[in-house]
Length: 419
Image 1 (tube, helix red, strand yellow):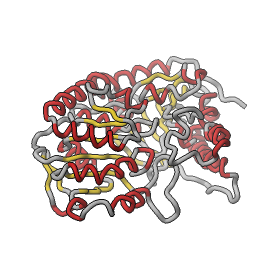
Image 2: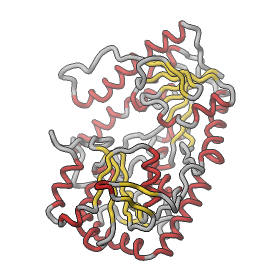
Image 3: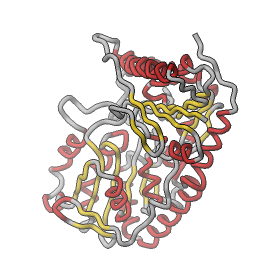
Image 4: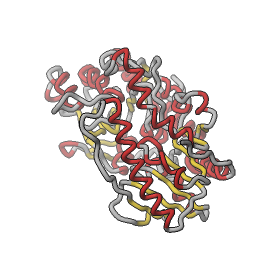
């Protein structure tokens, strides 16, 4: 088959699927903003497309998000027309529609089947809106109207999308029933052959300190350090964690930007805001045991989760992080927030421990329980890895299901583009 993949940051969620399609004999082409010139990646032909314009001035704030997606869709449409005129006609288009790029591709190839990666539908309901009272929705009672506009991209794609996948039930179930019926829950997959425990793991942190499995290492990992991932909750618990664990090292991964939710006030970062809030409560000697590593290469990330004695993961009711499942695959003992996406992956007392997202005292208490009980950590870590291998393993479970889904997509009658 001829397959076109659309992803702003290719390969993104197609990291494993795209090479697997090539390996079985499919021709795979990817359109992306990520590259400057045509190239090859694991047999995939990668082609760039270029934005023709920026956002307009004085656009209604609720429309800025959609305008950005429309600009990308327009540019991607132009690149697709060039591909079509060169003779390329995909049987299947696989797209992450989150940036809008694939909005007009059925107009270019009406006979192609469009398979969507359905990451999230923005719901106006408990617990999706105002889960954290400290950071209320920006529009108050009008938030429902803003979210309706934000979902325009989802709705336009589902008019033309033939089928979809979501990595978790939680994410799939955010979509309205009319869309949900076309979505299959298939996780991207965890490479459990690669992400394994390693008793010899070593990690160098700030000051040249080298941490191993013999050290009491508490880990906290996000793409960016921000409230959506409970950074503020963890930081406010940090003074008590350091006081009660005098030998512990706390190692945090995450950038200074914002992946989800509101941006920090002008000129500030969430990371520094909450450092400033708690720093005065922490003696210098204790602060020396806190290590912010920023963003790191994947091998360094693996070293971190392999030396972790207790991994803390907090999140709003939102997209589940790969890092949680990878930490489980490395047999880390997990303490996580008792929120819906987490409960899908962790059973309290069996594959990890859960605590109320806002309960700082409970977080410290359960963390101490975990760190004081080596047998409990070993049991939870082994069960966590076994669960990930059984449910989320890339090669034995997720990738075969993804390939089967692609083949079933190819047999569908394509939905037409609508005027």
